[in-house]
Length: 258
Image (cartoon, rainbow, N blue to C red):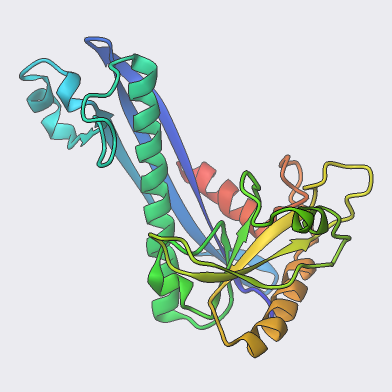
């Protein structure tokens, strides 16, 4: 069958002004599911939301109340952070940008859950799926991670991952993060990396956990679906070697409406 829809999100943030040296940030977050019907992409559902971010504890009395009509989000220290963080504008801005990212991730998660509530057909999600128990347990959802700041391999296994040839995958392993849902995962090489960066064309796939005897067949099936998404190319995006065209279409759609 293969994938019938693709989910991705975008975020934008810009400083609109400074008050007492504190940046006031306008953030936009969006997420969209684009469905492929008759070889054309259509919008299944999308959400775009705007928020204003301001560090309440760094503002003079009365300023927060003046911002109230815009329903600002407090970009002061978040739970688990230093309760008296640096007032440096760059530190405050970094916290605001992180909140915009969390907003985007929340929209993506809500759309994925909406798909799971209404559909059983395969959905390609850009990124991991362990943030939602509902999504992580759904057999219709496949998460595809393009960045590799963390490699789920040690010692000789790192070399095995980086030496994968096109269409080769690793064995399936389980990821069980403390504060997120467990998922089954594996690495897959989408394109020939000869003479290129060792992560060229390399993705990490996440799916719902299943009995061990079923996971091998599941990994083979999903890997075939992913390899089939190799054309058309997602050019001119710099991540074209790891990006499906359906994901690029979702991004371009969101950029056009935000």
